[in-house]
Picture 1: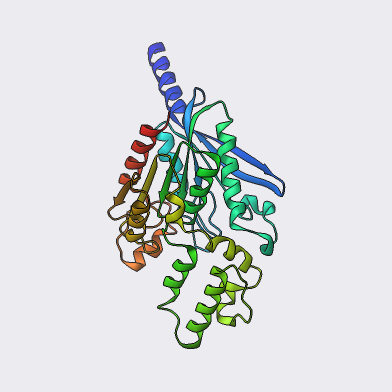
Picture 2: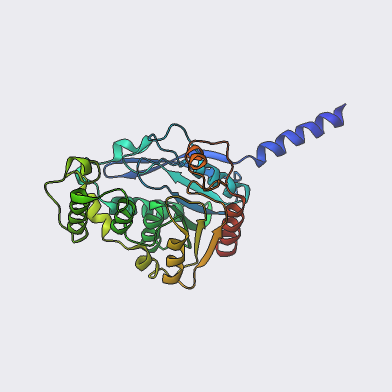
Length: 316
């Protein structure tokens, strides 16, 4: 009976030790606290760590948006996959979003570089933490460009783009809106885009386009449109992985191929059947939409395997 008790106790302790630890992580900035989650695969010893940067809009640290009917937990699952492989991670709510809402300035004062500087500050914070041997940064969707610029600014040890566009945001928006607009509205959309791409604000925005180009958001768009991801990626001189799914309805495979062309030394991995929220989903639109709010769908296995293999090969 005593031996059985000891064996049971050992099993319980081993199981507990295997579970990753989640801790609150805070980045102090002049405008407030950026709130995140640090996931540790084990309680002690030095290990590599990855900073995970979420995508566009009100997407939180877990990959979820309050504009959708439910969570998908894509970035939370990504952090879990890294922890299972012995790699720590920190994921965070960008300023103005979720738990970091109070750190966000008024809309008219926000700039794309604010997000870049925050990501770079997280990198520096991880580099200064004695628990971590090396630091990578992973950006998803819009976060791909944020992470790319931060990687260069803060000298990350490795960079990963997941579902990141190669074209500038203004051009991406143009391509997305072209089939949906016609006549005078299409003309006005092009007028506004051209102005913003040249660093100028646009007046007389039609009511139908105001949600995209309202006066308060135009300075942010100008600060974002000036960056072309492919051109910025060409400036990186660190190990780089470009990951893209074939059933992504937001970012086509051609964007990943353009990033690879801009950075021939980068590793390109195309994941068959993976969509924009990193799940295995066919191209059927109804199934795609359902996947954006289904946390029960697991992370695409090939994404996990390729990412872990790359990070283990390029981090201490």
